Image (tube, rainbow over all chains, first blue to last red):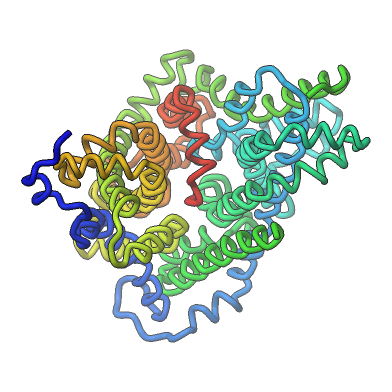
Length: 300
Length: 266
C-alpha cells in the first residue's frame, strides 16, 4: 500500500492536540450541565435557609450543624449503618461461602444458577418492593409460613413493627445483593490456579484451611468491588424505602436518601435537603476511597 | 476437582435452596398476576385491565420514549468521549477522565434537588426533557469510562494504519474501531437501558403529570391508589419488570460482565 503525498498532508501522524477536546465536548457539556453544575448548586444552596419559594437567607453552616445534631437526621444516618450490615456484610459472608462451596466441586447447571441468583439485580426496585410488601403483609406468606410451623404467634405486620421494620427492609437488601456478591466471587475464584489447591491437599489441608489460605486472599480485589457496590447501594435505598415504608413506622426506617426527598419536597427545607445530599455524597466518596485503600494495602 | 459424594449432594441442595430463595418473591408476583379478585377478571385479561384501567399502557409508552432517547444519545456521546480519552493524547485528558469518574459515584440524591428548581425556572419540569437530560448525563459518565477502557485495549497499529491510509479521526472511529467494539457497546447499551428503565427518583421529582409517568413511577402510584387486592398491582409489576427481564435472559453475559467489570456506578 503506497502512501500518497496527499494523504500525508491531510492526515499527518498525530492529530492536532485540540481535537480530543472536540470529541469529548458534547459529553462534557451534558455531564457538566446536568451533574457537575447541580452538585455545585447543591453545595451553594446548602448554605442557605430556603423554602423553595421565597428568597433564601444566608445560613452558613447551620444546615450541616442540623444534620449532625438533629435526632431524626442522625438516626437516619444510623439506619443507613444498620442497612450496610444487611446490604453488604451479610451478602459478603453468604456470597463467599456459597461461591467457595460451588468452586470446590464441578457442579452441573452452574450457568443456570448464576443467571437465577443474579436476576434480582435487574428487576426494578419498585417491583422488588411491591413483591416484598406482599410477603411481609399481615396475610402474607411470611406469616403463613410461621403459622405452618407452629410459630403463628410470632406473626405480625412486619413493615409496621417499630422494632422489626428496619431489619425487614434490610433483609430485602440481603436478598438482592447476595446474588451479585456470589457471582462476583465465583468469577474471582475461577481464576485461581487449580494446582494451588492440589498442592494444599497433598499437604493435608482441609476445606477450611484451603479457603483461608488460598481462596480468600485470591479474591481480595473482588471483595473490594463487592463491598463498594453494596455499601453504596445501602446508602442509596431511596426507592425501596419510599415504596415499602415511607420511612415509617414513626421514623424507624428513614435513611439519608429518603430524608433528601422528604425535606426538600414535603417539608420545604430545601437548604437542609441539599446539606443532607452533599453529606451523603462526601460519605459515599470517602467510603469508596477507604475500601479501595484498605484492600490494596492488605495486598502488600 | 474431585470431592466426595456426600459433598456433591450437599452442593446441589445448597444451590437449590438459594435458587428458590432468589426467585420466590418474583414467582409470587408472577402467580398473583394471573389470579382473580375484586376488579381483576383473572388470567391474561388481568394484563389488559392493568394496561387500560391502571394506565400502564401510558406509563410503558413514556418509559419506551425515555429509554430510547437516553440510550441512543448517551451511546453516541460516550463513544465520542471514550474514543478521545482512550486513543488520543491531549492536554488535560487525565483531569477530564477523573472528572467523568466522579460522575459514576455521584448519587442522584445529591443533584436532584437543585436540578428540580433550576429546570423548573427554565420551564422544563413536567416535560420529558427533565427526565431524559439528567439520565443522559449519568449514563455518559459511566459510558465514557467504559468505552475509554475498551478503546485503550485496541491496537494502536489499527489506528495508525487507518491514519496512513488517509482516514480522518472521524472515519477511523466509525469505520475502523466501531465494528470490533460491538460487544463493548452492546454491554453499555443494555446497562444503560436497565438503569434508565428502572430509575425512580428522577421521574418522581421531575413530573407530576400522570401521562408523563414512567413505568416504575406509575406502579408506585398505582400501589398507593389501588387497594382492592394484589392481583392488578401484580399484573402491573410484571409489565414494569418484563422488558428488562427479557433483555436480561437473552443477553445475561453482557449484563453480568458489565456489572462486574465496569460498574462502580450503583
